[in-house]
Image 1 (tube, rainbow, N blue to C red):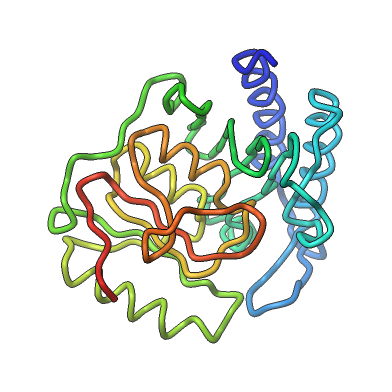
Image 2: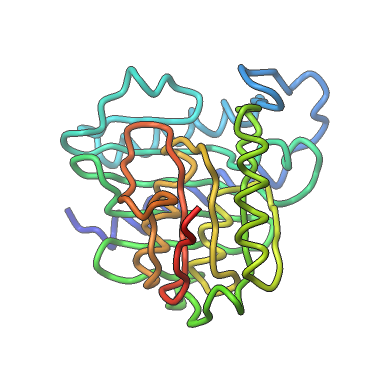
Amino acid sequence: MQEEILLQQITEIVHECGTILMGAEDMRGKIHQKEGRGNFVTDYDSRIQKILKEHLLELVPEAAFLGEEDQMDSTDISGGYAFIVDPIDGTANFTRGFNASCISVALALDGYPILGVVCNPYQQETFHAIKGKGAYLNHERIHTSDRTLSEGLILFGTAPYQAELTRKSFETAYRYMASAQDLRRSGSAALDLCTVACGRAEFFFELSLCPWDYAAGALIVEEAGGKTGDLQGNPLTYDRKQTVTARAPKVALLDL
């Protein structure tokens, strides 16, 4: 498989979907409630996922496909190729015109990402990585920062769809904030991971994410020289919900 050619083809498909995101209008009647507080899907999510599935599987017909609008427990990504896709990461932002949303596509092999693309059309920024070949922003090589936690900017997600994690999320954010310079909450895990990858922030965590939220972004962080895992430093897997962290190399995990 010619990975660079495949990356170019995937990026073109993602950019096509980015134009749909940018052209969205009149959200009335196009927002639908899913399970969990504040968990929404729009007609645009469904439309973009359909386009991604059709065109990505034309490139790699033997691949499995796991998208946000699918049932995770019915798709096996453990063997062979699999696309792991979030058609709109940051849907709540999207429905409000907050302009902090993206399209995230990872190609996994035997359960682990080998290629990732994250496109933020609002900022005209596309992040990508191929395993073992570095990470890039608009074709320029990127690296995580060399700052420590005391010099760092913290990013976090609040796991809003699981109310039982709210207190722990903010307690964890407080502990890290007490050792850092400042803190941000964007509403898009994929964008937060890429923000760490390109050195704009030093640490990100969220207590519960699905693989489509982090598969592409985690690879981009790792290829930019950063570290990923859970809050205890255990490696990520891509077949279930889990806690996700990403950090610059000089940032140590706290003993919580």
